[in-house]
Length: 521
Image 1 (cartoon, rainbow, N blue to C red):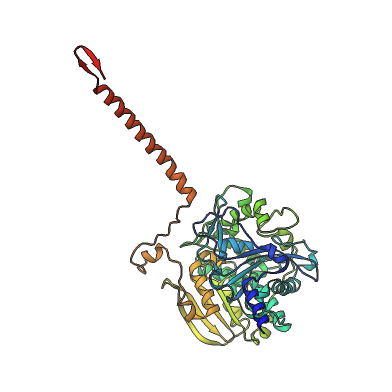
Image 2: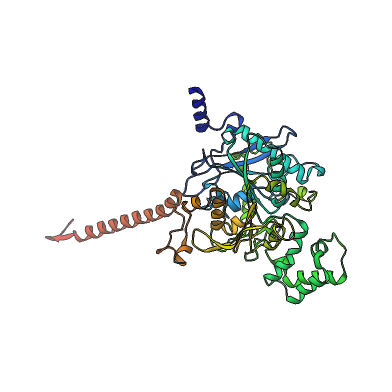
């Protein structure tokens, strides 16, 4: 018994064993923030036994109580987009600045959670290799994610049976229900799935698609006349008419063309209509025009954050530090070679009856400033046009730790739904404080998250929550102090020396006096 207890303690103190110990990140290139990195992190490839695929992950342990904090898997969507874009531009602990230095994200989700970010499927980000087109579908992708989780907890045994939450956004409205359905149907004893959360969940192509035109009209992007023409001539088939999967009337096509032209949709950030677009005049920046996001209130994520992230992750010293194997990888945010051949599903709604029967914690949340996968579609597939879940707690406002109205929430049988006011498609990037509060309350419960402390800035002062300004300017690093003080010190020394020298000259001249016709110093 004594040896068993000693083994348990050793596992907690030294949780990483085997070759994964080599994945520990000992130094992060270009890290330049006054706050030291106060958590352990690991990155590298884990090999899937069934296929030999090498799946790239990045684990950042919780800042507080990592030995007991739950584990959360984060997945970006696409399909075909790397989860490292979420890591660096949404809810990870770091943000890449324009000079490619790395700063801390004060709204990182790993405050009270151990977060693991996975590039999936193989061929995306740093995960290898590029697969055959027939392997790019939701069934295969999520089977490999499930397999990865098994390998992960085997290599990091401290996470066996640890409460696990699966999180993501966008196309994870497909990925996560497919994955969770398999995890519920074929549970593994080492994996303790507790729940999942999906932001702006693309779940049903028809329901989500047709809500787009309702949403852009409700946000004054098209005229009433154009909207009525769409409803009259396209009716329920508007999304199929728009993407060309159905041949529609000339009147419908004309209304669709008018909606695109009149809204000037090409110059709008459809993922966050209140955000700016990146105006860097580079081919690289232009290729990301529609992915530009910027929080309009707080945080370090600017409209060109993913451009800087791509440049940073292509640095050889960075790839070496995070243990990218088998040579240099020209990392891209989203791999067209994957997304162009990906065979998506029409809907994930058929996965929900089995999922809901398992009694998991489920959160669906929507940034209400996202036109692409909007709250109207989400509410419809949860209610009247999809799952038809009964309401158990009525629609009401919810407030953030800054005491500002953060959105609205409604409880259904089996899941909770929340909107995030003013947030775009990437909710953690566009409303970082409120998204952090939302996810921590979801995982820990309202009473627990109300006891947590949250970052503040001068918005709390302006709104009257705090009585004095918050010093939110970053502290100056040692090198910056040296750069500022050294020239000043040299100048002071020079002026002092010059004044002394002048004083000596004057003193020497004044002491020369005539004595009996002779000059005496």
